Length: 447
Ligand SMILES: *Cc1c(COP(=O)(O)O)cnc(C)c1O
Image 1 (cartoon, rainbow, N blue to C red):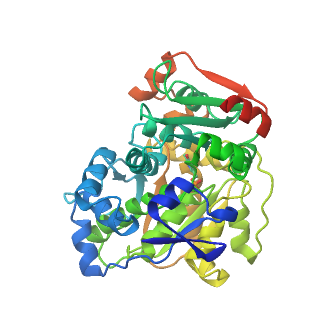
Image 2 (cartoon, helix red, strand yellow):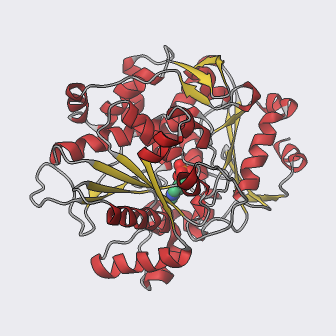
């Protein structure tokens, strides 16, 4: 498949060029020239495959000759070795043996090694980028700004890969205690993954990454690559799980419209959903949940886009005032506000509303959501009030609640168990460097 810059369609690249270059010249975002469309007969066959095999089939169309079918299959089988359960709030799981009909599911995308949905994209991207670099004999520095979950997923995906150094920039005080511990303990002492705590906000981290890329000298010296969702290699794999899970739901609930609610920040997850729909996934609409950083929800009201500085909230991975993938959403929907607002419905919520909801759901059902998932679930609830007809509600659970144990335990007044990888990280000593949010400081640090 060929990719083009969203700023200039005559600027083209193949997948490996788009992946390794991160941004198009002039700062454009890479967009697929065309997407394959699968008929319902074809999608039924794809839905009957295991997730990793369906992912490999979809990936075939996005990736150029660099990978043959066998290579893609083993890449996906290796990357996606964890479950993707869809659960009811009462804990029943969607499967063929399900006897009771549910109209609502929580799609738990947090069963990968770093317990957030970012693993889906990072593990695919990590494996494909490493293969491409190996074949080109290159060394690279991967610069990644994180609001908490991307850094861990990307660090884990590239850990111990020869010729690759990963530098994770996170906002000092802007990530949860558990996330910070996870970010600062990836690999052994001399690992190729380094954590930098930046004296600024997540927007500062993102800006610094953009500035570093724009600085030709610095970018060439270190052969910089971005692992943020500005990179099309992050966005494409996020379509796989929408495609596959919507087919599982369709099989269990034939003929009923399916609506996904996505707690959103940079809109990379939503971009993946829209790509899946364009490829033929049976998805009716998307609900978007924002915290008080809500430029997208605001845009959906009147078609005016007003990016703004971010403010810290309980759902810190969504503290984004200028979503990176907003131009991608517009591009995928022909820059037509009507189309965007027909497909997407949005609502935003304060921390107070999020806390109350998280506590209410826990008291009522025993299900524990992370604060981001609670925002998505609130948005789905608000959307449902507006809709008369029957539909299947799917709320995307983006992270395991234990990643936000400090706030979640306070909110529900109950201890939650840390899954193994987190419990292990909590026992290790942190390795981190604190930096001022300036290009000079970053340049000195990179060496
Ligand atoms: C990254 C993240 C989000 C936001 O996803 P976007 O693709 O940036 O919209 C939501 N929840 C969690 C837990 C995240 O880590």
